[in-house]
Amino acid sequence: MGVLKTVSDLNYETPTDIESAIALLAGDDHAKVLAGGTDLLVQLREEMIEPSLIVDIKRIAETRTVDMGSDEIRIGAAVTGAELDENEALKAAWPGVVEGVELIGSWQVQGRATIGGNLCNGSPAADGVPALIAGAAKIVIVGPNGTREVPAEDFNTGPGQNILAKGEFVVSIILPVRPPKSSDAYLRFIPRTEMDIAVVGAGVSLTLNEEGTCAAARMSLGAVAPKALLVESATDILVGKKLTDDVLAALAEAARASCDPIDDKRGTIKFRTKVAAVLARRAATIAWQRAEKR
Ligand SMILES: Cc1cc2nc3c(=O)[nH]c(=O)nc-3n(C[C@H](O)[C@H](O)[C@H](O)COP(=O)(O)OP(=O)(O)OC[C@H]3O[C@@H](n4cnc5c(N)ncnc54)[C@H](O)[C@@H]3O)c2cc1C
Image (cartoon, rainbow, N blue to C red; front, side):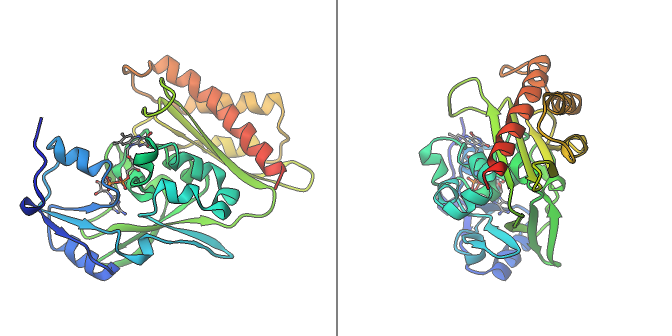
């Protein structure tokens, strides 16, 4: 096993504003962003990565705040799962997004692990990501060429891969403020009761109209493809409908059809595909019941 480099082996910087962080990242081909470090420090210790510079973004105010605006909610990329779980307003508006990140690891890990780190690390099984995709979240990226916003489903490109260019980092994540009768849910299946990697994760976000019919919906699946998926057909299946057995069966079929999982010790392709269908139905039912109460 590798030996963790001491801080003196690495250049470590703690910029307090976005421009300084960009300049540092743009000036070093082997720079790495540090947020909570729960993935990065493991990768350093295992010598999977050998950065020459670590840029800790936690002292940049924009990465550490949650702004509950009237049109949008802006979550700083370096806000931790534990902090999100304590935010009652966010939990009421987006319970599924919060339950995704607060499933990460143990309480100790949740005190460090950030929503942006979960996204940027690029695990296809990242628990924080499907609910962001289902919630039509926008990822706010800053870099040498300014600021850009990309849909959450377009951010990761494969295992450990994302669209960030040299000098760029994620500063925040934007969720919309939705009409009444909107909610979401995230469920995962793991072989143990906690501290394991999702075999499948499913996020559903939806809005109901006054008659109790679905007015808007999105579904995302994690751990069943090289990156978390937006299941586009789920929108047509749900919108304009009531929550019937036929609708849930169609949703389950859509989930099954969109799976392209791997076979590994946690689950076979057949098992993951079956579980994806089950979790899709359950997450949609929970999101629907939550929306009825809002
Ligand atoms: C014991 C344990 C249990 C875990 N359990 C789970 C689990 O149940 N579910 C799960 O999904 N994950 C789990 N993880 C993985 C990890 O905790 C999460 O992925 C976490 O959210 C990573 O966030 P972080 O802030 O620690 O990221 P870091 O480790 O700081 O960074 C992760 C990667 O993202 C990059 N990065 C971080 N922030 C940014 C940014 N704002 N902009 C650009 N790049 C950035 C870093 O350079 C690095 O490559 C677990 C880890 C451990 C150690």
